[in-house]
Length: 323
Image 1 (cartoon, helix red, strand yellow):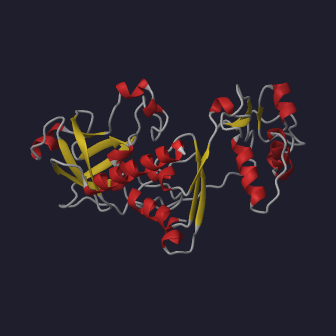
Image 2: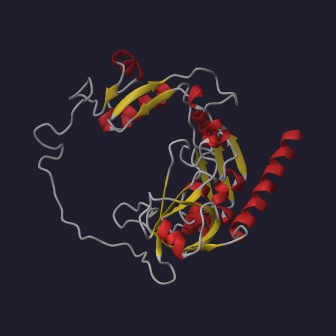
Image 3: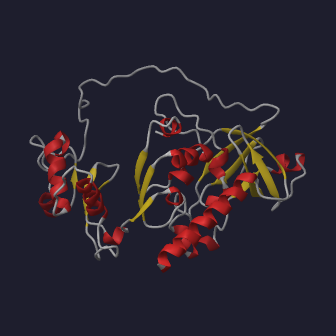
């Protein structure tokens, strides 16, 4: 979709509960695509980084305001019951329904249970699922159908659903991202316990006392080779972009490998990750980015531009709130 948007072939996007401007790799590519679109609608709890590119910003619902179901990786479908009515006046599904009706596709659900009923009609493995049955049993594991009306606690007993298992040899395909004299280090990114995902929720809590910024962890030998001390600002450059982070000299890292998190938008961690992806799953290659680092004394050009853009969006939000 991003490529099509940059080719002027994809005009609009409706984003609910996802902060792609911070979480996706190659941030500059993502934000260029968002800027190129004619209509970006974001529905979320906070003015996250993606919402700053939105033409329309709609309120999302918290978990306390939601009514519906949750299906986990164990195939277990459980009920979600709201504690309070949505402060915005509408649940997420009601906003989607209002938009759909306004655009000419009729949706007339009166309750989330009716949405589940439609899922059951349309999806063979969910044929026997209903709110009433979930309430009676506590939870249900799909497949839940005519053959297994109480659900299926264990799958693949005796044989696989398709019969015999099918095994295929696949050739190992190494990453195209290589270290060289210009980019001699490998950057890998990840999360930290006290901050959740892109931090849109946890950065607004005292959790930031434990982790208040994204830092670049570097092995003592790599730091010494570059004359870098603990806590200094360094520029990290890859084939995709450049950003600036404070260092944490750490024995946790192997020589030749550096690490950072991506919980704070102005760190620009995903400015430097590439949009290379796995050939089979298309999973982004967050863990393998060739970089070079060096001491610097000021933020990167991207960080300066993005901070100015973000401050402008906050001012527009405050102006709208006072009207």
